[in-house]
Image (cartoon, rainbow, N blue to C red; front, side, top):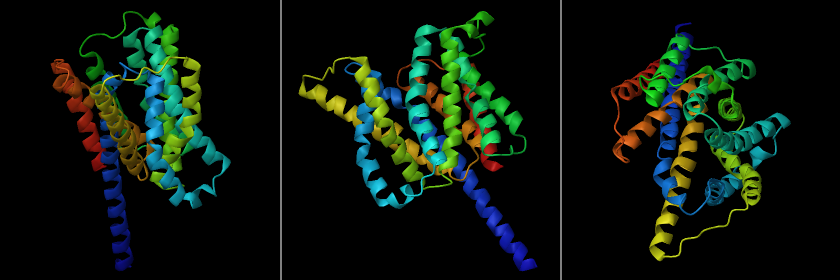
Amino acid sequence: MEKTTWISLTKGERAGSQTRSGVWFIALGAALWGIDPLFRILLLNYFTSAQIVLIEHLLLLIFAVPVLWFHRAELRGLTPSTVAALLFISWGGSAIATILFTNAFAQGNPNAVLLLQKLQPLFAIIAARLILKETLPGRFLPLLALALAGTYLLTFGWSAPIGHWGDFADTGALLSIGAAALWGGSTVMGRLLVDRMRFETVTALRFTLALPLLIAATWSEGSPWQLPHLSMEWAGVSLSLLLQAFLPGLFSLLLYYRGLSNTKASVATLAELSFPTIGVLLNWLVFHQSMTIAQFIGFVLIWLCLFRLSRQ
């Protein structure tokens, strides 16, 4: 009896350790998304957003094709629900959500768009409860409220974000809500997929399946390709493309899906809030935008939440 109890405790401790490390894998992967502007600012001088994303995904075939070949046995057992989840994260989470969020800024109040996008954790938690039948960890709701408060401070500081409630009713706000729902749903679908296949395979399929939609989106834009003329420009653009594709692109998603393989989707969606904290730090360190006291408090609140989640 004592031996059985000891074995049970050992397995429980191991599972707890894996879950704690999973939170930090997700947080680190999401944090890498925050360095995207370092490369995108240069690239936007030559390409449209759709063209940049298409080139990134073509570069990432260097990773995706060998992985899908070595793990091809996993592809034989794909069920309709697995295919649907893969299409959701590749088409919905990667392509359509980004398009909705970008268009929301063009059509709506930017502050309202940013605030509404913070609904993503709520969508993920609801979807995780309905689809994955997840139970929320202890003291989760207070941590959720604290994390959202920290994100609010990072985005808006002490000021009120909305001049009047009519800002929520325009087209931009609706597009932002759609993007938040797709990103929250992608977290849940990703959690479903890593239970059925290796996280490397999920990452490779996400990049590969997005290509047809990205090619169609780039073609429909009709924008000409403006390639660099000077050799120094070619070097800078090529390096930026490679770094963007393999750091905030490939490496971040490998960390993200590695952590998601043993972390609840409802917890993972809070760990993803490391992204705005890195964005603020980047603006301060690289682009010399001052950090306010409110933003610093928001930064601390989010990382306190991540620490508490990792300890549960």
